[in-house]
Structures are given as C-alpha cells and as structure tokens.
Length: 522
Image (tube, rainbow, N blue to C red; front, side, top):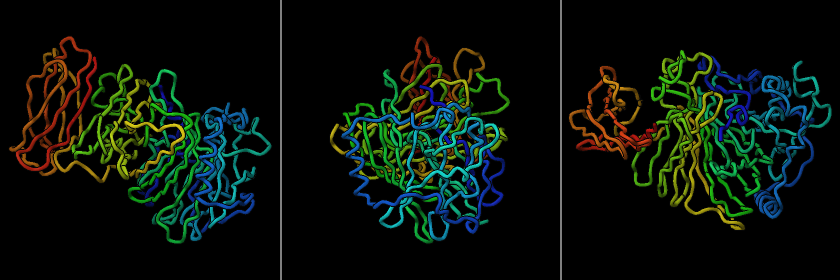
C-alpha cells in the first residue's frame, strides 16, 4: 500500500518563479541550468521517422489496443539502468542539445528523460507539427553521464521514460520546468514560485483491493507544437494497463496558477469495479495533529495538510490529513461535485522550519469537474508511514457507475496547480487543527482555528457532533492576532476505537462556515 515518492516523481524538483523569487530549492534539485529562449534550437539528429497524425488515428489506436492482451514491456529497459540507486540515476542528465523547442517562438520546450532507477517502462515520444508526427530518438551524446553512472551504462539504443515541459514566460526570459510526465501514469505541475510536491495520476485502479493495486502506464506521448504567443500547450497520451486502454488529452497552461485540462476516453478490457479518476498522491508525516509523536526539530512535515471538497449542494468540507497507526479509508458521498483537492494551507517558512525541503512552497491541486459526473464518492486513503519519502496519502473520485468492458467511458476535468485554490468557502475557513490532552490529562483537547473572512464573532453559533464518545467544555474565543476564532472542545472516547467528528460555525446571516471533519482513532 505504501507509495514511495521516489518511485513516481522525477528526480528534478522544479521551482518555476520570477527571477530571484524562489529562494532555496527543495530535495531532488535539477542539475540542469536554465536556458534562455534564444539559446535553444531544433537538433534534427534528435528526430526520426515521420508519420501522419490525427486525433481520430490515436483513438483508433487506443481502441484497437484494448482488443489485445496487455503486454508488460519493462524487459525492454536494460537491467544495468533499473538496478541503479537514486543518486546514481541522477547523474544521467540531458546535455546541451536539450531542451528542444516546441513552438516557433521558443515559448515552450521539452526534455526527453531516460529510464533508470525505478523508471522501468519504455515510453515513445512524438512531436506533432500540423498533420504529421515525428518520433523523438535517442542520441547518446545528447546526455551527460556522471562517473558513477558510466559503469555498465548501455552503449546501444535506449528508450525514453518520460519528459518535462518548460516555458519561457518569466521576466528573465529563461526556460523553466513547469510540468513533468514520468513513472507509470504520474504527472506533476507547479504554478509560479512553487515547488513540486503532490503528484497526479492518469488513473487509479484497485487501490486498497487485497489482490493489489494496478498501476496503468502511459505508453506514448504526442507533444503538439504550439503556435507563436500560445498560452498553453497540448499533449496526447496513450494509456495502457491489464484492465483498460485510454486516450488522454492534456492542455497545460503555465502561470501564477498553472492549469491542466484533462480529457480522457477509456476502452476497458474488463468491467472495472474499483476505479479512481483525478487521483493524487501526497505525503503527510506530522503536524499539530500528531506532533507529539515525533522527536523532530521541525514543526510540521507534509506536502498537503488537508482534503478540501465543494459538494454538489454547495457545502464546503475540510478534512485535515493524518498519519494513522493503521490504514484508514474515507468516502465522501456526493452527486455532481463542484470540486475537490489536496491543499497545502500553511504557507509560511516558520510553519515548517525546513530550509531544504521548503514545504511552504509545495503546490496545491484543485480538481474542477467538467460536465456532469453523477453519483459517486471522493475517496481518501491515509496510509501509516514513518518516513517522509513515502507518499502515504491518496485521493480520487470514484463514480457509482463503473466503466464496463467494451463500452468507451469519457470524463473531463481541470486541475489548478497553485499555492492555494482560488475557489474557497465564502464563510469562515479552517486554517489549523491541533490535538493534545487537557490539563487534567483525562480527555483529548481538540482545537480548531477558523479564519472569519468578514463574519462577526458575536453572531456565530457552533454546530458540533461526534459519532462515538462524548464532548464537553465547548468554547470559542478570538485570537489576538488576525481575524481568527478558536473553537475548542474536550473529547472522551469512552470505549470507542473510532469516532467521526463534525464541526461548523453557523452565522445568524451570511454563508455558513466550512465544515470541519475529522476521524479520531485510538
């Protein structure tokens, strides 16, 4: 169940920012220097055969592939690469020939990434210009291989394992990485001034099923050349797994908030009972919820601190994340949700005190459904971990109607990658959760801080409920700094091992506050 973040994120962490605005880089720092738009040019030696291209052809390819058995192609990657540890793999870097432009004005560019370490799936890359697609080919002298990686490095032809996208719209004109596709069906993006943190996936299948999770892979990508002055770039992808194939269209637009429009059509090989759309993987080790369990100089360690949901009926939910002692699965039933996402709300360096990881710069991701999604659930997995390099948080949308064998299944959504989602509850919003013991050490003390956002303290009621155990000493009072109301209550679990808690501020007039949800476990 544990998802090692090193398996599915690229080794290069991006900070896409105005010149000088980013500060220190986090872990997995890119070794490649930023190139200016004027410094790059197309290298014909990096391109091979040319074939006709159309979206209709891609759809036919995906559908035809679903009629054949799934083929595991990991054996096509040399073992000398997949046996590398992470530090050795990082010594394989794109050379001076990269990045390659994919816009006439060099506004966009890409770098092809080689396999190695755990990136063991071969990936085809194509660049689309008009009605033709030209294959990207491996050229040995276009990569720099460090001394540690040279031992056993293959001398023949190599496949790719993915690519990153770069944009040159910053003040200094430098091309900076803003998105990456590498590892199974994982992809990531950042807004301006942010760093990689959580990762998205094309699809989640059988997550939490006793027989084991299935990880679909992107077999091939078609990167479409953007016109001059384009604000976005388009990428098509062919997805493949034992259960389904699929055609994906990604439209990526970098900016203060980078967005990714996702349009997909699945061609199931079987009826898929447990499937997750718009899935994310993130990391949560500790915060004020479980801080007392860690002897650590830092105040918090997480890429995301909560799950935010805007239900179809307009109700806002906030579920702070936790690192439980056993696997916890939660399902938030809804119909036609308006949005959900994993959010990093704490945005100050002093919230973490980690000068290397810079968790306060990690991006948040918000999903905006397109069209009617119908009935289903936002599903949250919280997986126990003792290490911050494990992605132990998974969230996705699971429809009530499963994709069926032989019937195409369509879905569309937009992902907003930004520090905080621009859409937010109009009323009071949860900004922090703390859990400890009361002064008598005979009950738990639960503390929830609300940013009032213009609501009057005098006209606020508190709605509190727990599914098991009992509560007492419910209080509310303003904090001396900012427009914050603190709500506290004591909780006695009695004999319960689990209790679902619900808390909301209810104003006499105006929009209700964001509803705070928490699952307490013994």
